[in-house]
Amino acid sequence: GAVVSQHPSWVICKSGTSVKIECRSLDFQATTMFWYRQFPKQSLMLMATSNEGSKATYEQGVEKDKFLINHASLTLSTLTVTSAHPEDSSFYICSAGPQTSGIETQYFGPGTRLLVL
Amino acid sequence: LAKTTQPISMDSYEGQEVNITCSHNNIATNDYITWYQQFPSQGPRFIIQGYKTKVTNEVASLFIPADRKSSTLSLPRVSLSDTAVYYCLVGDIYSGAGSYQLTFGKGTKLSVIP
Image (cartoon, rainbow over the protein chains, first blue to last red):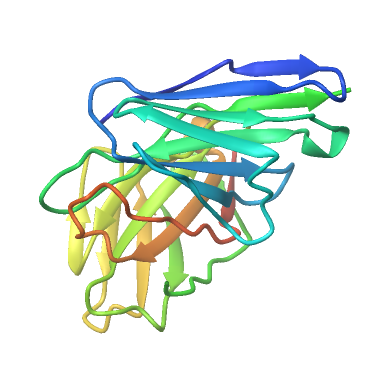
């Protein structure tokens, strides 16, 4: 299957700082990538849809000014958590799917564990 | 997006076949069924995908009855390493643009016992 990577795999930061998480599709191009957040013992929750060359689409309740998404190329999307606070501590996961003319499959990155002190 | 219902948890002994059933009564004509596996602190891993009847790959089988209102993921001879959360998702993925949006339910936590 297709490979999606994330960097960093984990990060610890002080409250008030900003953290950038990268999501890369390694062997395919992705016009669209998705960002999810997962709290302990809970399911994945879609945060936003990242669109190459245009603005991201955010789910209801997700602050677009706090979670900045940039999709500057067909293989890279970044999520920046601005002015992070302890409640932003979570597991952040991205996904992407190869552009095909038929059935699509989304592939997920390994996730990034964020701990805000 | 069709809503899915799965058992919250299941236990199985090593070496047994495990069947996890997912209900999706409101599945639409164009919807496909996809199953993912997630280990703790990892991203979900694609297992299998299907539209109707039976699909089999090297790790699992997916059984879909004619009315498509449910599906069953079958894992043959599970081992301890199969302990994970399994998610069933339903949606129209034949858009060809890589933009299919997934909605995750609570999933089924499978515990394999030695």
